[in-house]
Length: 417
Ligand code: CTP
Image (cartoon, rainbow, N blue to C red):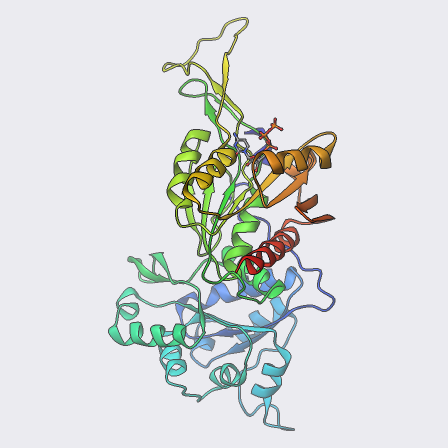
């Protein structure tokens, strides 16, 4: 697992930065909740990644975090009051015209109730009411508050009205109890928002996307494995981007050090065989399969059940693993189903010709050709090939690559519809 060590240990995937012509703009609403302190970490992360963040703090929010903290991390004054802009009294309209998206993090039970019934009695609800772009809510409250029938009704109404809900998570709550109501974590929220700011479309809504990621590892004995240098970052970026674009995402992942992307169903696996089993289960409902995993081509023919003792030499007999993509293509031919299939071709020479041959052999709609250098770096260089197109890309961030690939996926899905 040497290759994975270049990723931040026990940390989130590094938050991708944005290269848009102008900085994307986010209004970050902060309500009264013990979790309000996390808004400062989120605002700081987004600002560092190139987003302009303007915070709107409610009176209750200001009981938990000071405006000074939010100003310090964003470099922007914090808005508190409907009436602060004497010239116009229209600060809510000005903020709505300025913003690309709005996120309330954390959103309290009270604010959810107000928004569900269209009440507008402070600057935050005013901004949100006058804004017509994407609006995200990340609730945080005690589990008993979250499980109130009134909260459930309000949340159902908000979702029906097109608000985008983030969480809440299950976990440790402010009073030390365990339950649902915990604010979604900073890192996955930052990553999701960066993807959403890059591409605000929900053009994958209603589709089920499977992404495989990372290496597979094959046991040699109970303590040793055959592994490869895949970090999983390309697959995780694709899963996060697809989720931000509205897809239901299943991420089947070999061992990595990356934090699970927000809102994605994660299926951890180890060997090629366990990846195959997870794939076959998920594939039945899939519209799109993106096979970014570096599946081990070989496994030990006779895995030892006891730890091998040190010898001067050791011969290991390997046997081939099945080709998972090719197997699914065969199954599709038999059943007549036709999910869109995307594969990768990792080649150290004759890149394009070999990738095209692989695309034909594995019956793929799209293939991404790349070289071993892209396995573990921050930036990636690729060729995205389909039957009638070829596009050379990079160097670029894995997040930018993910959206470019998903653009082509969406275009092909639209052609089929
Ligand atoms: N793949 C797969 N099953 C395998 C090996 C690879 O489904 N046992 C998938 C990978 O996830 C990738 C594509 O097939 O999407 C191509 O992988 P790559 O390693 O480039 O090619 P291989 O098929 O393994 O062929 P070779 O190593 O000989 O180039």
